[in-house]
Structures are given as C-alpha cells and as structure tokens.
Amino acid sequence: MRRLNRLAWLVVEGQSQRFHASMREYDAAGATLTISGLMGIPDTFLLYVEPDAIRYRCSVRERRGNTVSVRFLSSTDNVRFRDDHR
Image (cartoon, rainbow, N blue to C red; front, side):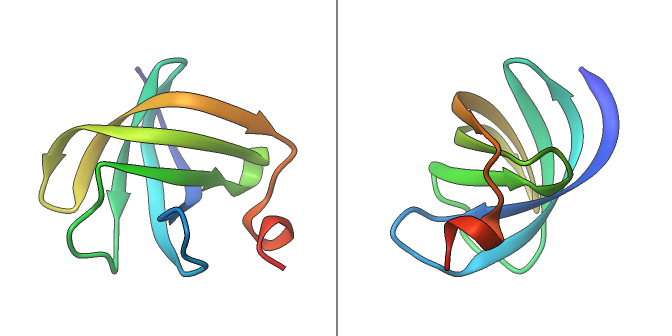
C-alpha cells in the first residue's frame, strides 16, 4: 500500500449526510481510512475522494477504533460529493 493523506467523504447509501475521512494508505484493491464523526461504521458505504474526483463503493475488511481497512467493490470517475448530492 502507498502512504498518502487524501480528503474523502464517507456516505451511507440512502442518506445525504457525509462524514469526514482521511485516506491514509491506498492501492488498487482498497485503502485504510481514518473517520471522524461517525459511530458504528456500516459494512458497506460510498467513499468520495475529492482531490481525485472518484467515488468508490467500499466494504469494510477490518475495524480498529476510528480506523477502517476497506476493499473497493467498484469505482466511478469524475464524481464529486457536492455534484452528486444537489
């Protein structure tokens, strides 16, 4: 995995509220995230990575406090949270 620090937003499907996340490590299969403001991270969710304009559908592989390791199930390019939730 490659280390980085990317701004991201976690969105539970069917809800418009977003939660701040920092993408700490990344590779083509998944990432390690630090999430703030969300108790009880769901098993699957959408992750919007703002600097890269990519939306990932994720599933949780491992949980450690406010840090989760996720697997990418799919991705969509040129999508930003602010444009997708108008």
